Length: 398
Image (cartoon, rainbow, N blue to C red; front, side):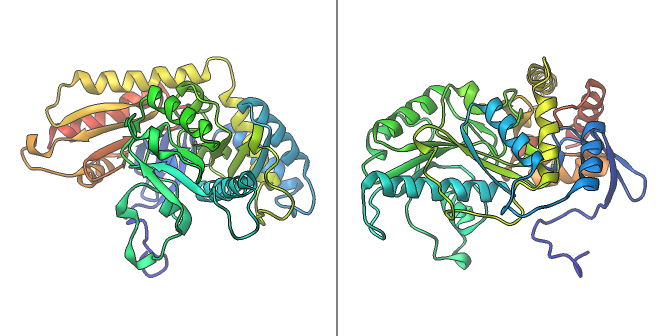
């Protein structure tokens, strides 16, 4: 593989050929329970009948048309997404990093307009983000990310205009937002930063401080959105009404897609020519997005996500294993910490991930000693039981 594909991901030497529900099959015929879902992408699992039909039907009609024009699926998906989220306008893109780039550009322009500054002299331009946050791997979104490990000197210099504050620190809110701040960008659950749910009271206080300073509130829902935490948007559960929401990962159930949606004072900031993308919002993506929305908004679906997540946390906690601590998360976005000192032979998260894969369970990590579960939202109780049985066997071998 290394001779053909640059292994930026540190990929495991397993080649998957098919999937059904929450089970993947490799080219040797071995089956695996999927607690990764493409890193939170395959919300409807693998081979979902409605999603397969949408792809087949749309492929016969039109895969792509230029954004010089509109498509029927694009208009239908935009209308459905805005209705479901309470936003007013949407810009479609192809990934989470692109959605966050769009939000950063929108915030910078908003700040420039709010400052009344002539071109090139914008005063209100700073984006406030959180320590341990993650917003993408482009140069700007890397700088927005509040983790020094992602600020490699090889890719410097990074854009200026980003400020990081500590989640839960109420004291910093009185000084973090001055007249240079254009926006607060926040994840209600920090995914890549360790699956850290941020205190809802602090999130509301931070959003209020930003608004009092005249700044926008951006909710990065790339990983938390589209039902992952048991609500269509995590920001709903955390009690804030963001001016801008960024979405990707699960938005089209496995087809690369993203969105930056906005409302209120952010509604009319972007105008023709401000931000564009060739592939964004093509008919195939939007046909799949419609299916995802239809499934997630079925009565009882999202409450079922919460129930499944609670059951997984309760089961793992009941094992009383000394080397598993701080089981946390919301919905089916779950994390837990390893305690290497409590193991007979200390191992880190990557080691445990490898052992699970060898045993037939796909899991992910979110830090050196943090394990992360992001199973398909449609995972069945039987699939959960099978996956947890494998996980327990692996843990008991440590």
